[in-house]
Length: 153
Image (cartoon, rainbow, N blue to C red; front, side, top):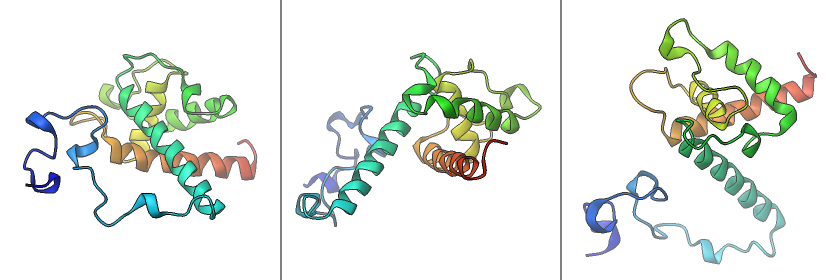
């Protein structure tokens, strides 16, 4: 029985660990990352680096979405973007308690809440997952890029 044939997601004992995203089995299955010529293809190396940085940022937000780690927003965002992110976050708050951002300003948990709202999370039905945070983070980055191009609003 191979790792892909296991019914427990390829994890011994059926338990997930923080690094086991979605319980997916590890393996190449269609991608042979070791064969990618990063040394001779600088654009591909830059893309891989950018994707890795974004993935790390999303993982940081995912782990601090409850605010228990009390990390600063600067762990993921540039300090000059924080006022803009806070302004974007104010537009995402709804009228109910569940749709208000409960996290203190300047915290990573607040940024995670903003990304989750941008990614489609309503504030109801549990915590936002990594897919929602990725979608929201991409939208936030696009919004910040647009603000940079047009000037502060």
